[in-house]
Length: 265
Ligand SMILES: [Fe+2]
Ligand SMILES: [Fe+2]
Image (cartoon, rainbow, N blue to C red; front, side):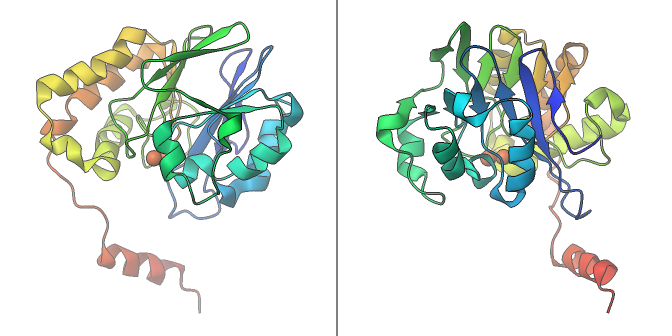
């Protein structure tokens, strides 16, 4: 995998920013560009990777041509370049929500006159494309809505289907099967520990909303691309998450080990 954009379809491209320079930062941060008659930016990446993010975006679309900016939720790894986007994409409408409007503040408020509020289950049209807001089962902010592009069959799952990447891969099919499934099952515990409290039947129903889309591709902000042949297995792994033993996240001992391994003085 290289740190550059990844086309999924003639009009859908993943913008990838990977923490390649720091081996201890192993959660990638991606966003999406959908081109066509009314180009859409889907999330805005992290400001820490601003130059790289913009270079990839500009390779796909000329910023003044962007008509829509879909903000999945108000976490900084999804809104990092939003203030620059507002400046450089003056004709873009920000697809946001009341809750994002209330909570978004790190990078400044989103102008309401440039906003369209879109809730879970609602749609908007970007030219010839119909886009559906659909909350993924795993999320780490209440404002989260994923985005399904009916034309391409690509579902932007936001933080769901992410993972701590064991090694570089464009698509999950490039990972060892056991490694992928373990990482996929472990990530929800890190970002959505409330899943341990969820009724398994209701949890399956939440996952069924994604299955009901019958997507061709699932693109996550924090993981390799999942093609159709792997989607059923990904959903099955997710369905088992409430039953998994809770693993402790890294703590002070691990921090000291990292510092010791990187201390060259
Ligand atoms: Fe998030
Ligand atoms: Fe995220």
